[in-house]
Image 1 (cartoon, rainbow, N blue to C red):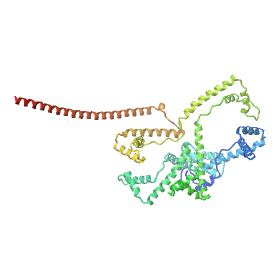
Image 2: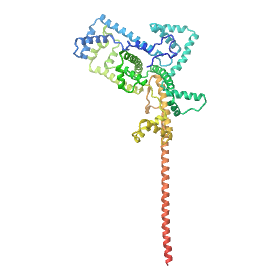
Image 3: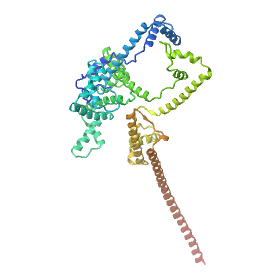
Length: 535
């Protein structure tokens, strides 16, 4: 993940200090983002450590040990319990602070997670929150003071943030277009742009590819640097886009993999074995630098995963209560002794219930379970990842054609098969380009529909054949009709060809018959004339 460097953004306050990658890695070194343990779990963990120190060889029987821990926890006094409760509260505060530091340093351009472009007030509030974070102020007090100040501000004072909002909206839209670029594409774009400015003919891609090969290495390096800058900015935008919409994050690379990627980029590596040898030769300080990098990437991944899980939990159906759960619902509001939990108090009463009364709660639980299963079936149809990008007509054709070409050309590699498919596509030998163009248009519509749904809700539903809309059904019917027409045309052309062949064959036969008949007639006439002369 690329961190905030020197590139400006409308969301970043100019006062906030921009740190280097090494400084950020040092800050993140002591952060783990582990959820805080409650008082009881902390007590249990202490008991486990005590048991391990006394009995090093023996294994813990978890069922028996958990029962013993529960009994000991009940016997503990209020003073002893407060120690664990205080520790839990301290861990909670630290956990919240760690989340804030990760959000502030790794996602500096977009500190607050929202599902739409922020308003002018939100931008003003973000600035105040950043200032408060640097002064270690309480965020609740900062928000109250910011709200009071915003109400008292005039339109002229607010105009600065209104203009920022307009800039912000365009930046927010940029986050969607996060495709990486390579140096060759940058060179092609510039060549086409210069041709348009000079009102000259736009050069062909094949000619541009040849000129790229003949370019000097110094000129190529300029485009490489330019592409790296753009990709870095786009990668940063995409990380923020992932947070906004809760896209499923990819697992980050480890320290060794980061080292390999770096060496491969600089063309210093040809084999993994060679990479392992180079890694082993590194000093401890050099290895620590890569370990710190991987740690920061892991923290960013954890933060994004946390938001992704929250998004799924919002939509996921809740698990139904058990028979005992329904019994507890009925007993809600009934007074129980002080300091005793409702679950512990009512469990023996539920166990002593007669079979007829218990059956009522079991039936309720069964019905709730069936409803939950139906909801879960519906929930499985939702997709929480970003929709796949649409394919163009040629790529769709190649995907269909390559397997057939592979059967004929078994020794050919993938590149050769794609070239053969490209020749077929250009010559249109047994290919209906319009059919693939229609498929590509349909795929584009599918992507747009799914993307709108995904950006609005954070997920989209996979449309099955039974659940299609009228427009989609009409399109599919039209496609089927067109396919039938093309098949009929092919049949008619083949029948015409066969009819022409049969006609030519019949003509040839008739000609041969006529020749034989003429010969026979001549021979007969010759014999008659000879017999008449003899007479």
